[in-house]
Image (cartoon, rainbow, N blue to C red; front, side):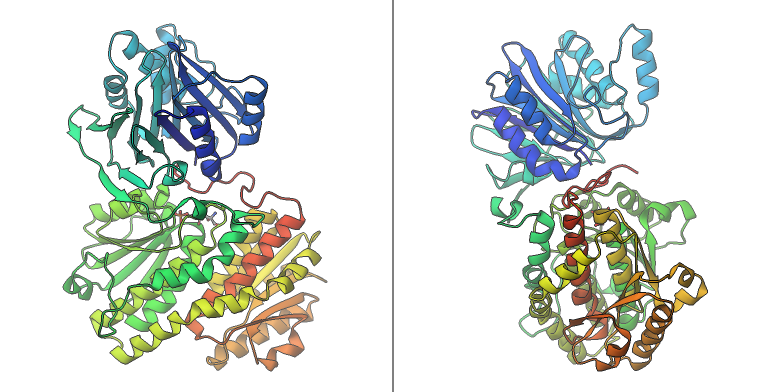
Length: 614
Ligand code: M6R
């Protein structure tokens, strides 16, 4: 949700900022803009649409050379995605330029006051008022750091702000509240970014900032303070992936590259989880065994794909640990007044660690004395920082807006959590846990087997260009897979797609079935005979009504052949782990269908990777 870059050093700020924006464009692509300090003033360009439009505008009307600047790629909240509303925004005299991610909730009030004082706004954004407020401060003689501290004290809502002052060629100042911002630490240069991808080409040393902090970067160093002006400190950390991880590596889309990285991502997420004696260990688990033993209810909160990972976790945790689990959309959670106390463990699942709905939900849970455990892929992000414990997934950067390897590694973390709880609570014998860990460790190879058959899925996907609607059916742990398959198709191919629990079909949704309707069916492994057979009944029901059944079933399952118009085989794996392989063909299907329809797979319309507004 908006990408932000800031730079001061010895390089061309325009190049650094545009490169950074390219790697942050997944966060929003409604418009892009850049501003530089040059000879006592600010020079900038901004343009609606993707970054390419801005680059074209700059090539037609070049900017002066400068070594200090900032940039922005937008996901629109206040005001249409046009040139005027694009960031950076300028103060009344054009001295200050500001970029912003988030929402300033009291902007109406502040805008009205400024207008009473004679200020005229040119955009519909909530950001422009910040530029005016900062400019009032620097015009009165304050430096930009003090100006930012003063202005932030007046702002309500969630925001990351980055600003430059045309009359100060040495500093870029930023602030954050409930919205992401990291500092990149260089030699004679420093960087700001919504995430580390913005500056990973130049440095892998980063500084994580706390809530309500202002940071000033100069060529010589970095100073952090609170909004009150008191000195503060960030947490320095080393980024353990490099530039190549943030590039496409010969694939047409980041999403496709990320799908094919899944065997590695799953393997990495399993690394180092066993002690010498073979017992399961979770390093970042900051909750004591006693605290975990005291837990009598788990509530999982998450959004989108992460929510579906939570639904799979429910099956695993309840089965292995015998603890009741509720799974709740984070945007709904705190509004239903959930019953929470110290014996409830809240598990927040978020790839980005910045999803505002999930962040607000964990804050609510902590006010009710519940412990919060985060499952997250992004070191330095807000959700793990505000949680009592964290299990990091090791997917590496996920750039495609549609989550793929993020989902699979979340599943791995959920299984690990479930097994760890089973170990601590003694609900499973040690050898059973070791057996499942062994099965998990075999999953990267099984995922590779599925990927080796990608061409079959691609052919199938291309046959469906022109379909208006696609249904997905699953049961048990296959039900969240069906939901995830449908979400992938909605967000990438803009098709009507819905996932159903197969047993629920007869209670209404079967009315949707008509001649030729494609229905993708995730068939449970045969180990659970009843579940498997019930699923076959569901498939027969839709086929009898004219549906074209595309069945994903384990290899050797001949019982499905009479009912499958198309059969895609999956490796033989345990029922609870089947989502790790079953979802992969659905990812490939959506990616290829969207490609064949001519859509931008990495940047689907209306979406952004990280949703930092409620
Ligand atoms: O970063 P998070 O995991 O918290 O994000 C949650 C959702 O916004 C995300 O999974 C979204 O649904 C994806 N675009 C799905 O592909």
